[in-house]
Length: 203
Image (cartoon, rainbow, N blue to C red):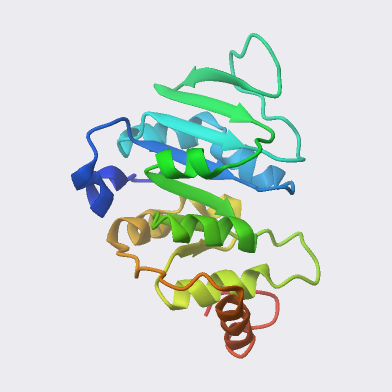
């Protein structure tokens, strides 16, 4: 059984916020059904509630629309209460910046655009690797940024309930990401190629 920690209390931003604590989950323009399913279950909702969060917004992209227990109407955009947490969901918006800015914590796929946007907003981030993708460098980029202490990585959505992962989140103090130029991103990926083992397993 997971032992959730109070992320809102451990976050430096919490000292400046008295508003509702929220999680924003994004898969960008792609699909990542395993991640969406992992955060849209009652067990995850209970963990989020115990950690101090009151709302979770899920942007599910091109994937299957998540269905919540007790949801009366289906639609690409809707909201529902689950385990004491207000869930909001939608497929796409013209910009995710507003939701990212409003979030206390971001859970993202490993797309470079989503990662860079979150880091540029100085958000605490958990990046989840999609191991089903072939011939991509998402894991190299994510693990390189984790090595530099800019974010935390999870090697699969199923790890989101891991005691070790929640402990890492509690202890994590991110290093500010000051350079979002793509040249730096490319350099980061190049460096990652030298230390990330084949198959994107963690060190």
